[in-house]
Picture 1: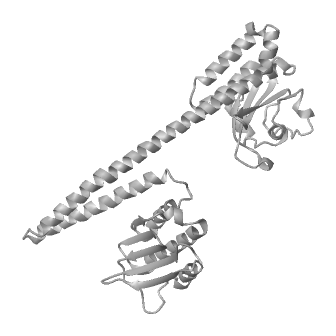
Picture 2 (picture 1 turned 90 degrees about the horizontal axis):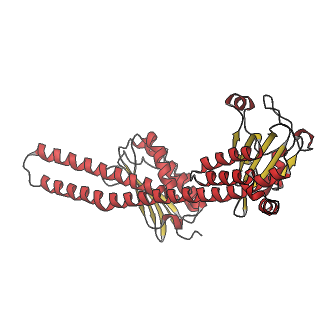
Picture 3 (picture 1 turned 135 degrees about the vertical axis):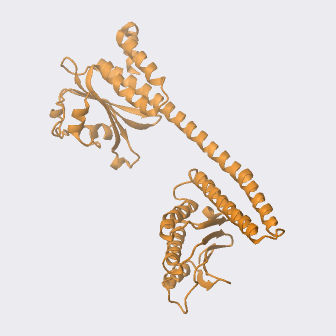
Length: 386
């Protein structure tokens, strides 16, 4: 690092600049909160280079042809000035120069650079400029921008060296803060997994056993009203078990990718609850996520939405069970306790559309009346489509 090569050769290891740098690095590294680390970097850069204004632009994930800033932290401008500026920059003009060519950049006057866009209305006037990239491991994390050297004049080569050294230490501090954040996230996931396991292995099993015990009492009591009250309690336990299972699904959903088929089915169920007026019960069986590809998942969700919409509009049901079964075949089954399918193929069930989606995967669709009351719709495709 040029700072220490130059510093030690010239006796700078005793200088106030080096002491200030070490103090800044120590203050920056002592915090494990990423937002706090980023703000400390900007403030330290301004202090070390005697800059009136500072900013740290964080690059977002994108292709090299479309790199842009997704976060912009500032130092030196008051709330009124920030409000007048309006939207923060995304990386054009001089800021874009440093994004495209991540090397330290010093300018006497920003306005003289050919890539300068000028300042928006209300922006503080700025002339001298020093920009330094911040790298985390082998990737550019963002850029540190400093403007308006206090007391006039330009930023010096020594300013550049000190700020470059700060940026190098900042990369380590950012990496450490992100690692600490990830460890915290993993701890939360472990807690979710433990809670889900305890709910399933302990709470649900006890409730289920209690329900079975109460149901047994209904067969030995001679009083009808007592049997009815017991059955009501059993039904409430059943509802509680379903709700707990929903909580377990939600806990696991946080651990899965947003494109997970299970997560998308559960999200759709949640969206359709207000249309139906009640929450359908969902049953998964088999390796659903490993069997369903993106195209099949899209058709599954479209079929499920169509079926639930038809139940809501035509069946007058009070209960719906959704089965998502993955084996040698993939099966989507929706059962309701409504009025059942009408004669022929009328009734707004969208059979032709559902059949077409199934046939596209070499599968089939059928809708039949359930024994007693309601209907059963089954959308079935082979595990390996034709």
